[in-house]
Length: 195
Image 1 (cartoon, rainbow, N blue to C red):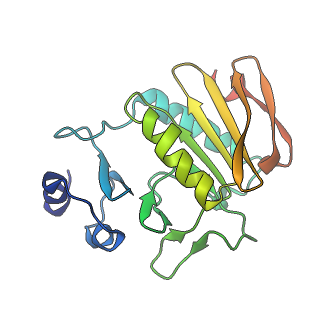
Image 2: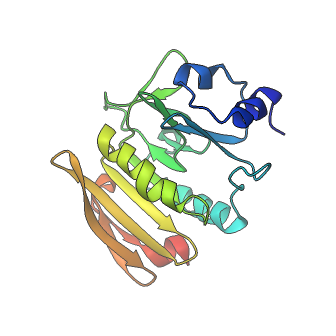
């Protein structure tokens, strides 16, 4: 259940600052702040619904798969706040290169700056946010590789950073593979992740 302070902020429907967002009580409910808008994923009172079981299954499979290439303690899953100036996002899966200085765990206990690698898993109610709003933020702040996973269509879009902008590496469906630069050019089998 959402704390009363969060419900009150949602009812007010006004732009919120990061400072105000940080004053909200901690909750296990996924929340984000994009362009001053508080987004809550709990399915109550018109909020974004919580993810379906298919989302959870795919999230788990991808994390297990990635742990072959990236140290598990460096992988993070939702809910993990990432501060990008006046925005606070919670990528479904993220990785920060330990040698990176663009995303730092600060004294406040939160990550500040762009992770090196982000994966978002679409659901019917977050497609626009993940493919437009968060895409723009991840590109602007310097994410090096971004996967957008569509569990319903069994499809992965991959973007890589080149010359300070995202470039489409490709869209991959079941039965196809792609090479991930962030994973040392490992061959990624879409069927193994989404099958």
